[in-house]
Image (cartoon, rainbow, N blue to C red; front, side, top):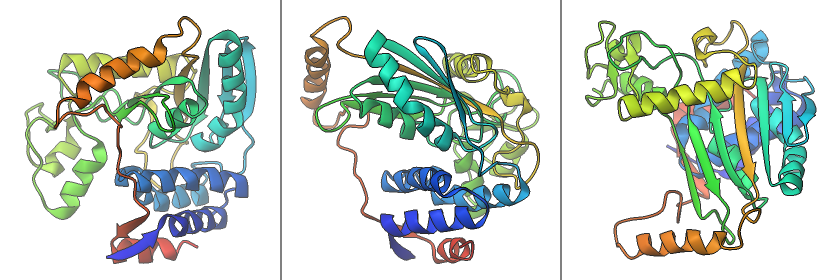
Length: 324
């Protein structure tokens, strides 16, 4: 295993992305997301994706040098058309306008349309909360989740994220797929020759399976059955329908090196916590204090352990180094 610092991860990511066609400012935005994923231990959204980003830049599946188009269709509504470029770049261009709208009006929304996968949705809601706003985000992805009782994938893992601002750090932060598990955990289990737990996926006949290969030929299931399915559909409405982006059904595998651009959407709600009350912080603190009284309980995202350096397999680090 190689021990690499976060600075090394960011530097390598910028170099690899620019070499494969990303504009320097775009490469930096994407590299920041890779760095943050590794810093928080979210390995599936970090270096794990870097090679596919580069291959897709080379093939033209993602546009690395486009300038997102930011508009304000209504006073509280900001839209960033990513033009089939990276979601991180489109979000960065639109975020200042969205924050200004939320602070002016109280509640605003930010739609990112026609974008490459955003990977870690919480990376974006964290940035909104850093401006003192409550943030809720939605996105969709390639179809891997079947409806309860079904055997064919209809929607993506369709994550939902929420970050609540606090004093110096978020008071609460969660980012989870509405499927029982992220698809990457299935592919990693297959690569390692390991079985998966029951309740993660079904085979192509709709039967529960512990075989990752059978799961990849079938579909994931929703977290919590019908409840998670409903949240996944809500993500589809918010990310695809509201933004005018593609349905999960119409997106090829997110890591495939070539093919049609992803064209996915993200949708964010930005809310000024002082709009309706001056008791916001007290109400949040009431819950946080009650949870902290229980030794083994915690608020989601509280006291996250952040890494200053990361253990990366020698093979992966060597492979990524050749991309620069």
